[in-house]
Length: 341
Image (cartoon, rainbow, N blue to C red; front, top):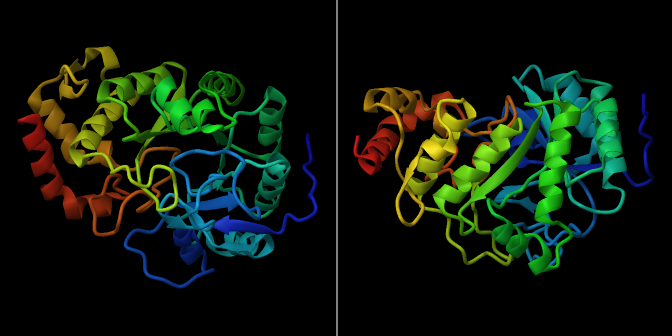
């Protein structure tokens, strides 16, 4: 078995503010508690990638403590490890997710963080990282990583290259990302690999749904974010997607992921918007009332409270069934109206 070793300087890890509060590292009130501990590799300065929507991007003028709209203060890894050991299961944590910033040595750092956490906890660990070699993915598995995520973010090659690839002098390429996801699905196994899509980067609903189907056909779990403009990024002036459009994509994702329909079964208008879903109104209403299409998508146990929305709303991703019950009537009224149910 591969045993990762500590690289000099690996002392700090970033912790999302909600996770820090749950672990007792920070004080604060939470409208919805995270059920996953979200960590991020620490480095001084920014990521070597140049994604237009990301505050960690090397050309971003955003606060280095941000990822999306969430604050990620740094803490000593030893302190985080002790808190995970003493509190994580007690407060209902179901998963640990390590987000990685791209820089030289990040794989070594990630392996060390995983090893340290695995020494005190058997909670499943996910890692979200850039495309890796087959050998590197094997090292993640040997270290104790249960699932890996490689974020595509964009639904089409054109949007990918324009927002995080060749057209912004970024290190990523659409083809390499998709090939890495396919390889990861073979190495980790189907259902243990995920990717994220950001709705609202300029794609049509049809393009997003087709990208979701591509993933499902390969055993890759697609999760959804709503684009969130962050001050200091290249896309700070781009608005969030209309909530009605996001809801349609969420419904389509749920139906496709659960094998109820395929993307080609959907009816789209001339602009690529979803016009209707291929099932009876009664069956669709039953699914919508459960709230499940609108819950945060991703790895099991991941709820990412308020990652891409303000607490005041609108809630693009609902973090819990309890919160769904509070907004259910308002959301169902909105959804029924847009689908003429």
